[in-house]
Image (cartoon, rainbow, N blue to C red; front, side, top):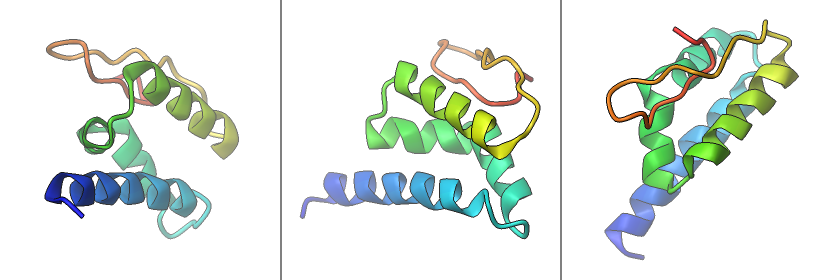
Length: 87
């Protein structure tokens, strides 16, 4: 396995584990922080997840966790960053 493929797999695993941990009350706030910050965008970029797919995933997470839905419109810099919080 190439190094790039290993890094991509790791980024995907981080995202998937964070999604799973959203239903663990001991980890939920940390996971929401991850999805609301640069960590998710970094991992999603490494994993090759398109911006439109990132937004779909974040909407799915917001809808399924019961958290208030806020605009998925946080854009910084080059416009390639989105998050749950709209901050």
